[in-house]
Length: 373
Image 1: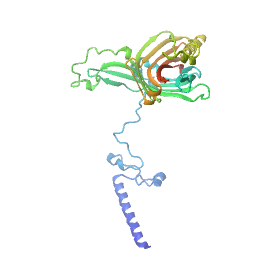
Image 2: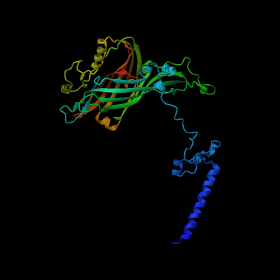
Image 3: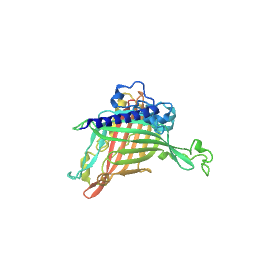
Image 4: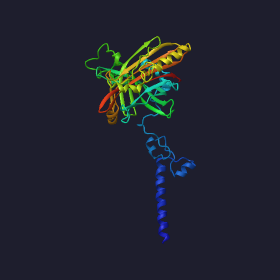
């Protein structure tokens, strides 16, 4: 091996590297003191000059962000969920009271869940169970505008997350259901409402005066995303009463089926939660009354997919447990002890294939939650 040419080649490489470093130093001043971490990484330049932003791209350790990158420090959700911002609260209307975190007692919720099972005597089983859950609601900052040409529809929005757990049994405390989505409060308004609402952007012909009111029967919207492969859009309205709600009796019995199908549900009585899960809501209200706690007022939110809504299901779900309809009612209650209580019932109609035919089965859940923050 001839060592002389190797040394000459090494010397040439060192000279070339020194030239590159010198050029970098001319573009970006080198920090006087190189940290141990910088040296270990072999970075010849630690930070570029702030005077000439164009040279920032040569900074190895801490490149400056591009001016075109969004400011990720701007939160999507309003601080505190929006409950400290009067402007957002006002626009959210009847949804404002939902903001916060809500939890239930361990056995306060009940779920009636029919499942297709070809080996079962009637072709289905019931996986009914008590459950507890956590729901969080947070308002987004600002509005969502739907432009109509002459005027617009603005949606003031709350995002939500729901986590449901088995209360007991072999799967106690395991997650049984999770979903997320949003609640919308829709109102009409002039189109633009800013510089774009001046000439030459003023609608032609001019916007109606007054602006048409939002139809109250579709002013409230719930958008649901369920990991089973379902997306749901349900519309409805809001109301307020100054007393406790009257909880309706629900029926989980399948519709237009052989009589033998009903055997799975037990005694046909409103006190049987397999028939009427809403009974757990009445029980919760009665327990409060027994403690001397009354409901001062109730905000009612009720939405239904059959009210100009829609449901989309994955192919597997359509073939084996197709979701036909969705409806839910929320009762947001202010209690005489100062607490806020949320009660709800939810009905999902399932189309289950049994023996070559499809039958409609109600899948109903009901629960009572208390706002904890």
